[in-house]
Image (tube, rainbow, N blue to C red; front, side, top):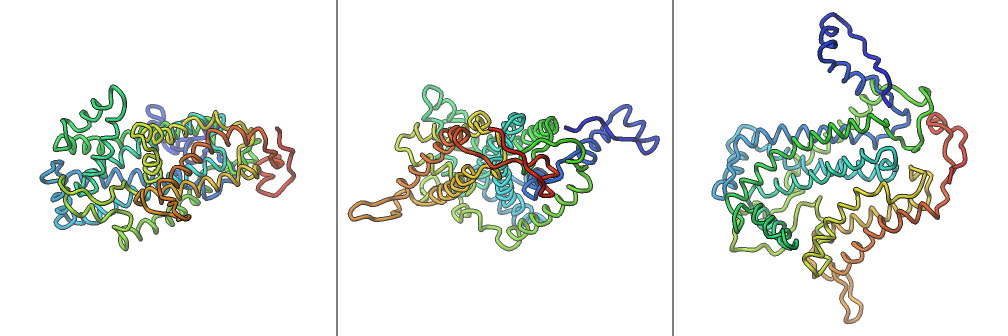
Length: 423
């Protein structure tokens, strides 16, 4: 926890402001003198990386919106106008397009770090739920943005996804009609998606503020997964972690810059450089890479409504993880059995993503006259995805014998004595 304020105004002007609007005190207590566990590793850098990505997406998005025309007749041409005629428009567009992928790379690392180190456990349940809400808003924002270039994949992706809502009993068709703004995808649809794509990043920013607030109540977690025992376990956030996060951010920006300047289209689909044609269906309709695991789960079920339920269920299950995990030990460092299943789960998610990018009838293996297709593999992996959270999480906490925990954060850093883990 942040504790009492340590801020002291440096001069009369800052003292005057502090008495009327203590914003400098808030910044000091939250990002300068904020007590932080001394054993945080570079996996904790991605919180700052995500903030950077959000700011980049908002700034570039606002500038691009000044030149974009949200109509079916001019959307594709306006994107080409940005690329060819607007000063540095190509850089802005490539930063924004690849920035979405960088955003999701960072958020997946951030989430898997939370799963590995038990960051969702009490007293950080609200922190985890807000993080999952940010992830859900990111997915919606990315989908709305994917439609805006109005290429082939934009149009047909919007067609497939919006039609899924029509499978919801009673209200589905009404939701789909509202999203379309009529009875088919057209000008009202792209106008609504543009408005929502512009609005949602600011909504995400608001939830991020709540997320940081929820973080500062119990304080940072740490790789050992134990509570801090006094000031000997803590260091001020600045300069220790500001310098560490800055170094991590620079490395991330180098990777980001590589994609922007050397491989700007490698993470996208070439079909989206063909103007949308309602009369010509692409051979394979796929979403962006970061949504492919959920797309694979959707296609794994023969029933349309069943696929929709499982796809949204794959996201919904993340919100209840704090209550599914029965282990009293947070960090996977001291949970040898859970650690193995954690890596299996990562492999399953990666292979699900690969399956989502393949044609469902593609043959993976052939045994005699029996063909094992992408659909069969997706079904097995989808089953394991839910089995991992709904069965293994509660079960492992009951049967696993964790390793002894360190006596304190300082002991874990210095390799000191350990205390027996409590069951």
